[in-house]
Length: 258
Image 1: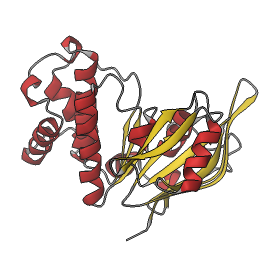
Image 2: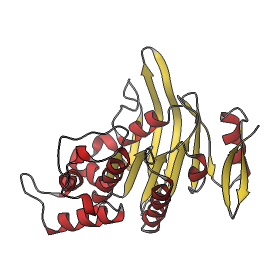
Image 3: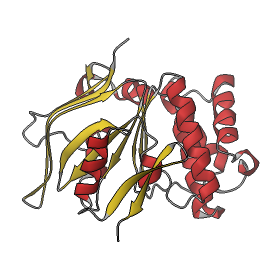
Image 4: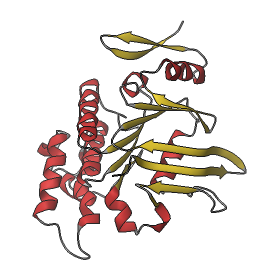
């Protein structure tokens, strides 16, 4: 089994004539949780979209992203969708039932023009139970609150049952108890051998990840274990020394520095 989930080479994204992301080399270890952090405009979401194949790695075609050792462009769309699941920001759906929204995550596993089978229904129920959204399965997605929608979209991600999961600000609109539930869920996924990559603004929760990918001004300034003092110093630097990392109850927390 490969020890690398994602590998990126020669990544460059240009928008309106300005380079907004430049990453020469990047390796995301398999079977772990990597959290991407940094100030607004650092390029976090753009990098995650490149890793997901939603943006080209380089305008001239020289960039490359490898998923579990295979180039993304060499994978059939169906094969890619089975191995890599994506949860982005501000995702919307038509006025579907919650059950149908989550069932969309099973499309890569279903034969062409075939309806969902028993396994698909079982995976959807499991995902909705894990996100505590099963009780809403018959409700229209559009009738849910913002936080409830976020949990349904998380369930759709889980229903894919992919080996690599990419999440862009998954904690948006979630209250603290459900943020804690998400953290527990990510740990369960990693224990199952899956790889999680998340973009987070909640630095204290990000520090619970196995590794931090610290970004600023469209580049990666540091990558290392979350408990490493060098990682803490890199994190403080990109936030202009306005935060400090402290131990508290056996965990690391990010606090404002006055």
